[in-house]
Every structure is written in structure tokens, then in C-alpha cells.
Image (cartoon, rainbow, N blue to C red; front, side, top):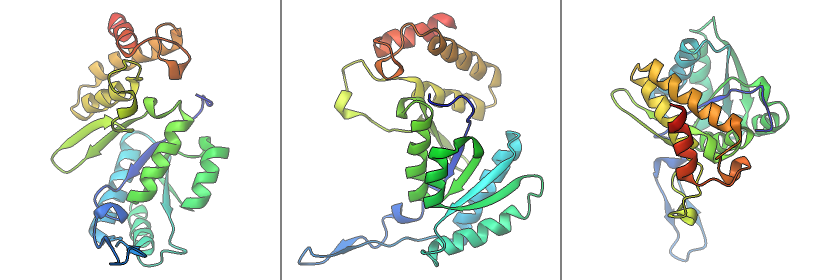
Amino acid sequence: SRYDNIDIITVRENTEGMYSGAGQKRSDDNQSAEAMSIITREGAERIVKFAFELARQEGRRKVTIIHKANILKSTSGLFLEVAREVASRYPDIQSEEMIVDAACMNLVMYPERFDVMVTTNLFGDILSDLCAGLVGGLGMAPGANIGDGAAIFEAVHGSAPDIAGKNIANPTSVILASIQMLEYLGMQEKAERIREAVRATIESGDRVTRDLGGNASTSEFTQSIIDRL
């Protein structure tokens, strides 16, 4: 990583906004296209409440609400309005608002100023990859899709068809996602054991993958973690 003083959680709404798929169409002459962004009060309140509850649970100090309400006055405007209402219920957690453009710039220049970020679907997708770059790349970033009664944990990058079958991918993101899963299930001790094994393997510098400066295969890197367990 380029930094040793950052620990950022990005909380992203995952069912609404530009990714909802609503109203997507092209003109018959293929000269124009349009799509619809939908933000609901229920969806906005749910995700912002989750962010503040997570911040409280994890002992975090601040939640940054990322928006574009200055331009997207209806959709992002509603999100910001609801976020302010929710933030007022958490006087123990510092709240700040930031336009997404400024958030990108500040994440590059002053990432240590961020703690928990909460935003809409499209912005969250982009910002989460930016944050992954700050901590060593997509191979180092886990992701969790958490609903009311179920959760799915995965690498933030999804699949990597260009390197499929080559045994060179960094498996850290998937392993960290499994750690998040164990924490979600209340298995804190098991999660911490795996985390320490991952940390020790990377710190040792031996048998790490190419993106971490080594030349080990996926299997060799994983075996090194298993050996430390």
C-alpha cells in the first residue's frame, strides 16, 4: 500500500439509483439513449442508517455522506435530505457531507481524513474501486452485500476472465471476504486467526503474488496462509 494510516469503509446502496435498470432504452435510429435513476426514501434511509449503525458498532468516529445534490437535485437531493435526517439521530457520530467530485480528489490527496463513507449505487461502485487502489489494488479489497435476512460476501472486483486458469490472481480479497462472513456470523476468534495469517504472510514478503511484489502463484500464496494457521 502507498499508505499506512487509512482504514476506510465504503457503504453503498445496492438496489436503486442508476443500476436499477429502470427505463433503459435507445431510440430507433440509435442516435440517443436514456436510463432512469430511482431513489426512494425507504432505500436511502435504510442504507444511511446501516452506515451509522456500522460506525457505532465498529467504534468509528465519522460518517461522510457522498452526494451530487447540487446538480442531481431530485435524486441525489432526496438522498442527501434523508441522510441529514438520519444523521441527526446519531449525535455520537460525527457527520459530514461531500460532493462526489470533491470526495474523489480528497481520497487521493488526504485519504486519512475518511472513516466511513455512505453513498448511492453508482458513486459507491466508483469510490470503492478508488479506495481499493489506495490499499494495494482490487486484489486486496473485500465486499459484503448485506440484507435484512441474508448476506453474500465476495471480492470487490468480481470475476477476472483475463487471468482465469493462470493461477496468478491475488486471493486476498476473497479471503478477507470470508473473514467478513465469519464476523457477520459472530465467529470473531476464527476471523481474527485468518486475518493474522494473511497479515503475517504479506508482511513476510515470501510467497506473495505478483501484484504484491512477489512471484508466487495463487496456490502458493494461499498455502502460505494455511501454513501459518
